[in-house]
Amino acid sequence: MQSSVPSFADVITWSPNGAGGWDGAISTEWMQGRASFGALPAALGLRAIRIACGDGRRPRSIHVAFVGPLTGGPARVTAEILRRGRFMTHARAEIRQGDQLRTQVTTTLADDRSSSVVVDPAPMPERPSPEALNELPYFEGVTPAFTRFFEMRWSDGGFPFSGASEPGVGGWCRHRTECGLDPYIALLGLIDAWPSPVVPLLRVPAPASSVSWSTVYHQVPEVIGTDDWFWYRSEATAAHHGYAGMRAMLYARSGELVATAEQLVAVFDRPQSNPG
Image 1 (cartoon, rainbow, N blue to C red):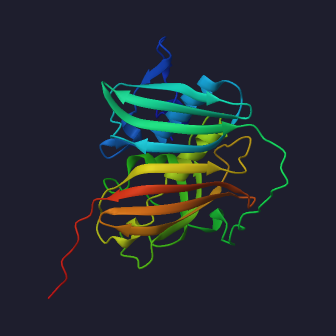
Image 2 (cartoon, rainbow, N blue to C red):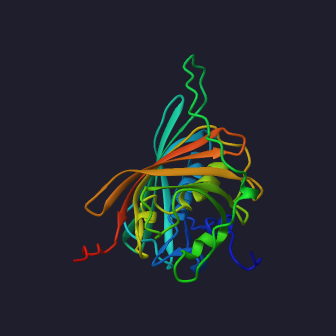
């Protein structure tokens, strides 16, 4: 990427405003139609929460409600601690444009504790290495602009708008630009970079927007860089009346489960009438 183009780390680093918040705007390169790439408000909220907490507790889960589209104009993010307990902290962040709430982020952070309960996740399925797969191409006017900042190698499911018979997508992914020092924030970009698993069912392009998104962190690497590949897989749990539920898993290349996610997605397609 050209050095003049803002990296993932750049676009979520807003300026302190002296009133307990941060001010900034999303650059046009990171937009998804009229709104920003969804991982950015999630990352902005988590970053604000991490700064507000200031105690080094690890994020365990994050829930994001996309109340309205975060457009390219000036915006402000604020964060507050809801409760700080002996081992666990609950916190909330909000992003507003003018007097309109655009995104709300709630996060649970907690210290490690000793426990006899250990449940190993399902192992990552065997897949070709990313080097053995073709890169997902970028199509101007069809592929969202922000996808240029991620390298994706498809391994599972149909391509978007291919009229596939099964709802699911999967493949390898990594950041193309600097993603910052916080691996929990960097992972949000990778988890949200992929299209909804119902998009391959469509035969013509149509918007699909996240309404809400929950992520649970598991074995998170200490550092994530542009050389680090992760394998992603998502599937639809159900879809009716223009809304789809989905769940996803993200694995490190070493095979460790890094994070799981669930989303509610609104699909704005126009059903085709049956011929004859």
